[in-house]
Amino acid sequence: MFFRFVASLILVVLVSMVGIGLEKQTLEMKRAVSRQYFQRDVLLEMHAKLRLRVQELTAPSQLAVLEADSDSHRVPAPPLPGGRSTSTASSPDATSVPGVSDGSRLPLLRWEHPARLPQR
Image (cartoon, rainbow, N blue to C red; front, side, top):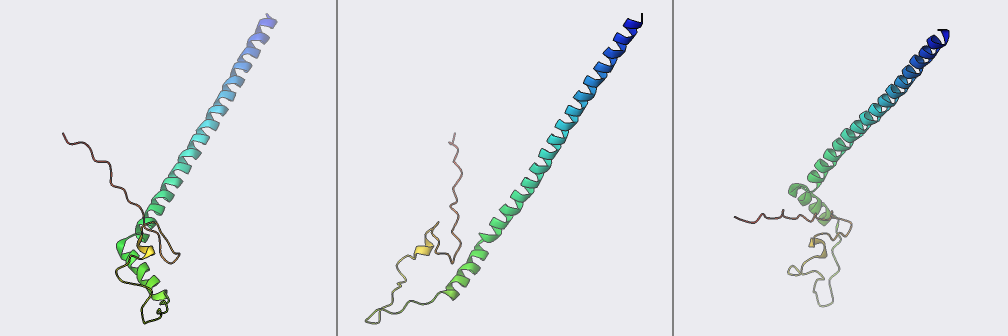
């Protein structure tokens, strides 16, 4: 009789210890998921701020200000012999090519049009 009581008591203690271990593991996993949700929220907020900053920097009015600033800081090229200038109004400037930067101006973004759906 005493043996049955001790065996059942040990069985109850083992089941409760296994239950406590599973609860600890579950809580640890919930904390990990909670941290991941927090990190995702932080990254989404950072992404939104960076997209807003990119839009601010690439707005046409901002680009005009940046171009005016870069034009005011440029040193004019010395004239060629014979009174000719090195820059001509009809030739395209290297800085007007999208994606090319000389350091004084932000490179232009390469915008792509979304794929057009076939018309029915």
